[in-house]
Picture 1 (tube, helix red, strand yellow):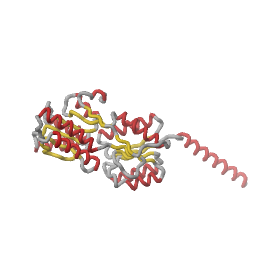
Picture 2 (cartoon, rainbow, N blue to C red):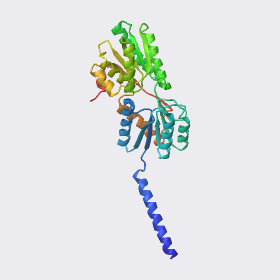
Picture 3 (tube, one colour):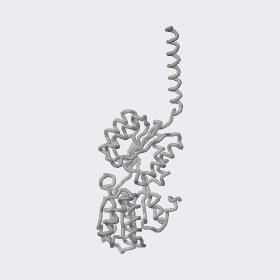
Picture 4 (cartoon, rainbow, N blue to C red):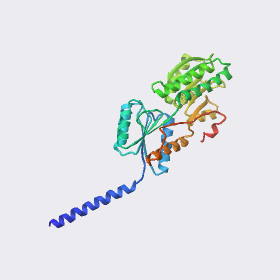
Length: 315
């Protein structure tokens, strides 16, 4: 009797062990990636996430991405969830750099590699960074050149910024510095925050009501730029001497540049979404396999205008 019970238990145990081994073999060596960003309604971030997921899956990895809607508490929960789900790599675009430090520290203590996107946080294996003041300066420089060429150095300017985030505050500062320095007779008549197309439309409609002579709009990101372009079209403002200048070079922005709408220039960082995806996955793969990755990696800035838009735009 006891022998039969023992044999039965042994058989069950062997089956469970075999099932466990079989489950493991399905994903053996597969890199698991979790990514949390601020806002997926922003076309820049939705484009990045889709491209990175596609690149990861093409290389046999598994990726999940979520948005925290710029809520740091929600982002902390997302990081903790990624850890509990056994992610090998977490990519985080911080809603609040200081606010997520502890969560990232706990993730690293659990053996998870952390990539910080845009923010030089302490608790990350590597930080993928932009010199945001310089990036803003590039936008302001292009806007100032337009002011000098089309308006003899004198024009009313609006800035769509987003000072709620330190990196975007620095970007807005760079825009303001370049315009003030390179087109000193221009007048910045409005400055307000806009991070996505809906905010860009709403804020520009308000600006046009109170400042109908605005001829130049400088934006910290593609979301505000797309909204400003739509608002300008709706208000009949699109003309040879009206220009929107921005960052991100999203597909809607590139389409607007190509079609002679209000967007005149947008700085692309690193390259296309596919270029970004390849660069990010290269970091992921190196971290996952134990290769050395620099603590800080700075990204290339490329102004996209009518002259070179075809290099980056595809239908």
